Length: 197
Image (spheres, rainbow, N blue to C red):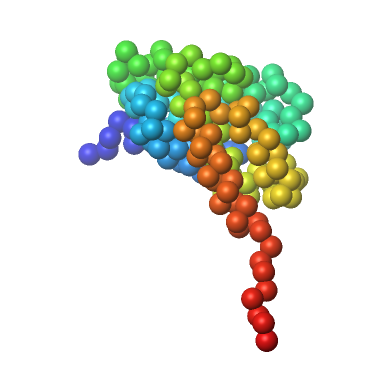
């Protein structure tokens, strides 16, 4: 039998078919699980919130996305639109699956400010914010973001390194980001020639 989280995924998927959001959301959900092991938090709030946090991008034309996020963003109001629209979609999906009403308001509130609200409202909100941003530090995130932002991988990694403490709230997330960056640095390090003939 399909779990409630799987039902939410199924209903969210059509809204994630833009901006590589399905891949992003899957990676962020994995980080959410890892962060909950370290920090605690309520999975009944965190998992639906991370699944639904970016559904609102579906309401913004794809050619405007890069104005709203990334190192060259010029239109913060578009980022706000994706949160507001995402909150509406999230509420609709949660009601469709008859999700526990005790959790819906908190999930919707998290979705509605996951990017533009810099202070976390709660531990649950902090974990969603951190899980969302941690994807950027993975090899997949770096590859996708470098390409879409018109950066070299090295430029993207350097940008990430300067933002660990600014973007991430929990100590666990900062540790995870640094670990990901260390792995990336090894991948990017020039190979040495061991041929001594």
